[in-house]
Image 1 (tube, rainbow, N blue to C red):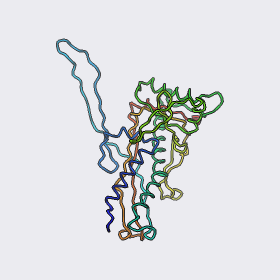
Image 2: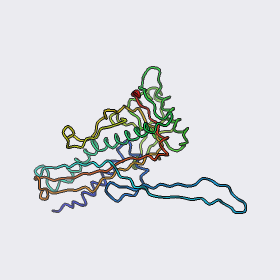
Image 3: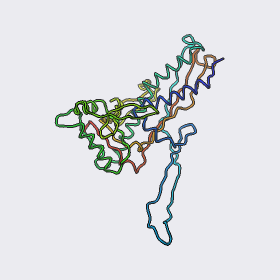
Length: 311
């Protein structure tokens, strides 16, 4: 065999990891994982730092001694997802396998993997905000465009709530398209834009108070989702859908530094038709770990607007 399977698998893996971050509407959340230690598998180590506050300066003794604590907390990514794909040997030969496989995996990543990662992260953040129940940080019963309501006011209230809790850094909004449409109509084309960087790619997005607003498909903006295992009866299609208790989310306001999101593709495996014992076909095994965390002391930085009523 002249094809270098290890090189091809590594190439796929690098490309798919990059796509997962750059095309996911929540890809900006991965930037906080730069100091995370990952050595393969489902476990990661997240750095946690604590420093003491100011003390009195003494003219004779000088500075009060302070302490710095740096430790790594081991976390396990709960989302361990995978699929196996096969391409019949009659459909491709060794020369065009890489091209065909790349097209298949890119389509799978775009239509299945990325939407699920987005939906999981959104639902996780919303559910954590609901459970934390911080005063004024979760609102219910707002439908964009409803009579007597203002999308701009709702968004500004969310931004103000986060700022009032002491978060003065960069904020990001993930919002459903119908909310953004109402906001743009209300501002009559006067909505400003900012340059937003995600996964090494810069793009212009609408903004309010210099806070970027990332359009997120409605079918990813749920408070809860049901994830299918891909093999149980009725779940063969895999993927996810809105959970039975799920509510539709209008938008989330969140400091850029709050979520720690990690998505890692495990080593991709490629088998030739000669190695594949089940059938005469090329086989590709895809496995991806991912999860998201928010430290307890940052739960008051999540503001969520939910379309449905609380009951």
